[in-house]
Figure 1 (cartoon, one colour):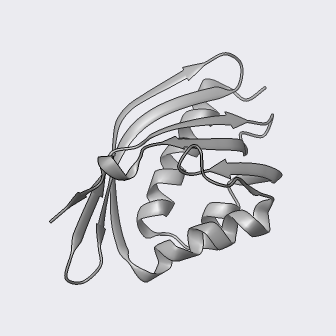
Figure 2 (cartoon, one colour; figure 1 turned 90 degrees about the vertical axis):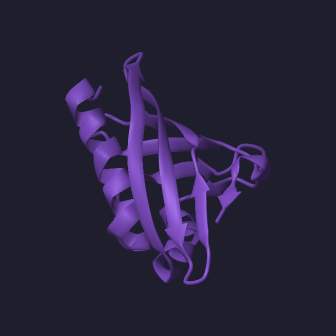
Length: 124
């Protein structure tokens, strides 16, 4: 199983890449057969190619991320709350999701579930 330090490093790298990386770089943090459910209740994206496609929308906007809290539990799980501020040119979108992830022995993400809803989005 991954160490807490490895999990922590993956979460921090994930947030860095959501802010400034490419979809391919983000997808590389995931195991080949990983799943993403973002937000919870929406269709699940399975496999690295589908996950890369999901994150490709981030490449058209500017994002900033800020970690609020990270908790590591069990042998391979983490939950964290954070903020994403997205600049689309004429609009700023802010959301504070809570993500829950599981990891494989190499600290690659095997599943990610993002808890938020449209009511949680702030526009400015």
